[in-house]
Amino acid sequence: MKNWINGEKESGIVKTSTTTPGIAMRGEPITLYVKSGEPDANMKIFIGNAEAAILAHGQTQLDVPISKYTDDKETIVADTFRMLVPDSSQIGETSIYIVVNGVRSAPFKFTVKKPDILYPGDVTVSPLLMTARAALEPVDGAVGVATVGAVHDMGMDKEGAIYFIDNGAFDYNPDHGYNRRNMTIRKFAGNRIVTLGGGGSNEFATKLGDLKLNSIDAMKIAEDGTIYLAVTNAPLTRITLPGTTDVIEYELRFHRILKINPQTNEVKTLVGRNDKYCLDNGMLYEAIVDGPADKAMIGAVQSMELDKAGNLYFLDGGLAGGGAVLRKISADGMVTTEAGAIDDLADYVFYDNDGTHPETIKAGAYVNNSANTADGFGSKARIYAPRGIVLGGNGKIYLAQGAGSAEMKECIREYNPLTKEVTTIIGKAVNAPDHFLYSGTFKEVDMRTITSFDADFDGNILIGYDEQIYVEEPRCIYKIDVNKEMVYKIAGYKGTSDATKPQPGQTAIVGAVSRILFDQFGKLYVGYTRYDFFDQIHLSTISITR
Image (cartoon, rainbow, N blue to C red; front, side):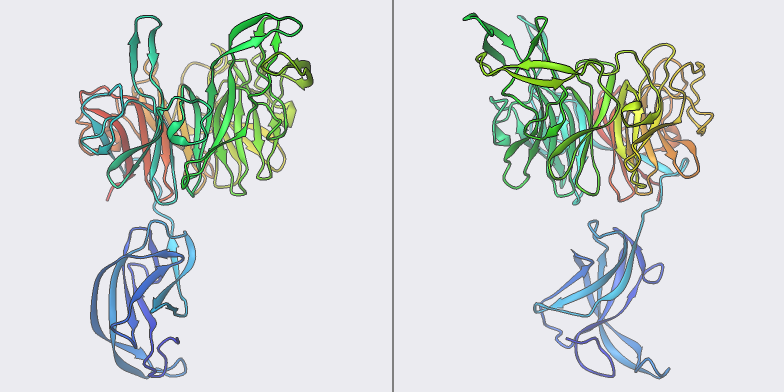
């Protein structure tokens, strides 16, 4: 098939009609003019590799050049197709092409531009997901029917479907006090909520529907919908003590990162061993060990991030609650510690669950017990009280660090994967004054109580925080402009407004932020652990005011 040139009656794209010639954003309407030699043919239209849904089809007369060597024109009858640029279209230079009866036309150059950036004073906060009240048991269905507990973590695939961890609610057990119900993985798409997994009876199930999830420490969703879960399992296990015949019942804590196939719901352990234990001075020893994924050991994972090469980065806290190391599972399955160091690297003896087959492994579990926050390269750097990691558009990884003591304040730190250098770029890790200035230059800003953050398509960092003591506006969303080295408030206000309706960002009320998520289409999603209204708002959106 050839494009329509010199009067040939064959199919081809003549031109596009957009607000800016040859350029449009995802979701923006465009009109395509096509010379069709087969008007009744089965036609599909693609922008890049994303098929565009045809909203309207008509015909019009159009003047086109006879050739590129003359200004003479000829009037033709062209088919017009009205469509929206698909949300899954790749940002940047691409092409539009048509497929007629299975035959593909020549490409027509086109550019899908980046959405507008979220700017202070130019955003709207809108409720996205509300239920009457938090429910002990999740109920699937359409919005308005489905029930949700507390949003614990979120992710999104390339189709724009939101995955979230439902933390459930606290249920009273007279024998053990308040215990949290089994966590579940849920999907929010097409105005419906579906539970994908959790709620099962087996902590080590190989199918998502059978999986019991007592504790989900972190989650990451790949573009193709692959689910990565960092979990802690603590089953009661009968252990034969080494060198004796004594059998005791012990709560072994197994830390694992799971990889879940979205098509088959198959659950695989990506890293984390369940076949070895070590009792050190009467305590279960939870180790950090590098090496091949099937031999490596992990501690308490606090956050995960995927880079473009398929490497999975994660923060590992070992046994110590304050310190952490930045680790990586490479695409070829090797686990390495990239930044930070453990304090107790030594030889430890690990046994099978029946107390046999001792194996000496050089391991460590206590990370940065001294609350050190030094910048530096690789193992010379120290990470304390981390709140999360995110990959910036510049390929660097950003760490949100919490306050470890009265002298240690929150800050944003930058990790360069090429040099393995950790640098504090915003705030002071130690000895910061208590003025807590959230907007201003990198040198001026001093932060407190960061709960979550994410990056937009330009690599700017978006921060959610929940501060109820020292500031006038206790729950807000902030933006870190990495290039301008400035921090701006996007949304949040201490006052009263109807949060069940769209609100201007500068006077918007937000809840206790648990997770924020930028969708690469110009919209920010905010998940809440609770909302101070009778109507329980679980998710809000922050978008450009149109």
